[in-house]
Length: 253
Image: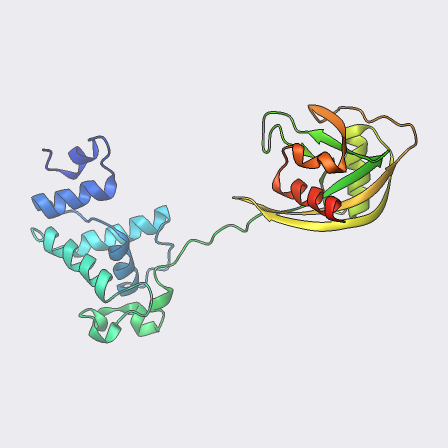
């Protein structure tokens, strides 16, 4: 069995933390096993204002821990800070009055212990505004099947697309239908607005009843297939969540 952190990390399935923990706790190597508890304790004691999970924050915390690690006592040092973080220096409502490091804790002195460690700000979830056209003819509604590749590949949809900066909803819809289908439309009443959150973004879809030029035929520019579907048959077409909401609103309205 390898006894050094470097040699342990070379083993399959052994990451940085596990290698350091084994080396320190099992073999007494003078190394730091930087887990969540150690990060929290160190960030509070030294009032580290860098995000703990950032590369720079990780280096700073590891450097502080390594600088204060007593030679030959790595197992005790790591275990003590792990236990302290798990039982007293907890993420919320830390028991500072019972902490043996209270007099040394810079974050406690400043009253910011619950703001440490600093968390990396999450990027804002993108929000897209989309329009969809309900184009009806002789009791049927126009649907397009998305290409097989990409998001929602192969599913059927009411044609439309994403609003561009500075566009009104009606301008967006007229542009999208012209680009996708080669149709000139008049945008009428709004059926409704529908919202859905995907894993990495949110969408608000505005669906409008639209009138195409008489006798104009849609062109298949952006879709794998086009079809005119009866309202009572819409459930037969596989759709994404938002288009299914439009379908349901049409059938119940």
